[in-house]
Length: 104
Image 1 (tube, rainbow, N blue to C red):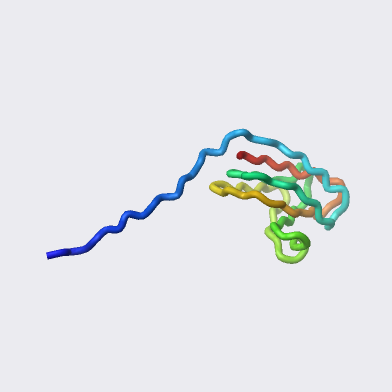
Image 2: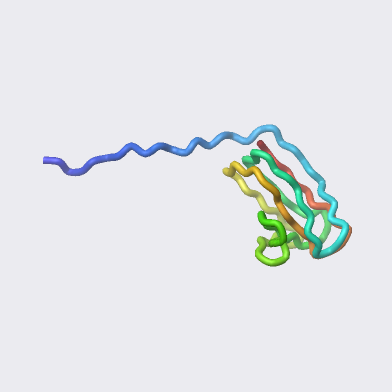
């Protein structure tokens, strides 16, 4: 009598992020998209050094249309990824610095 079967499922390989890199991205104008290239990023942290709201997206032109928001004084941490591409962002105030920490 067979009560059930089990199927072996492969597990995802999660690599521990190493080699942190810090980027201080200057955003000179409010509500104007800027970009930063990311290569093989496993973990990402984004915050504004000033008092601005950050809007970010992964598609050119979307940081003002279809975006994610980081409120004033908050940060965004994205872990467990393997991302190569461009991050597009803008701030609600001029002359801001966005701090981006990335681990590969």
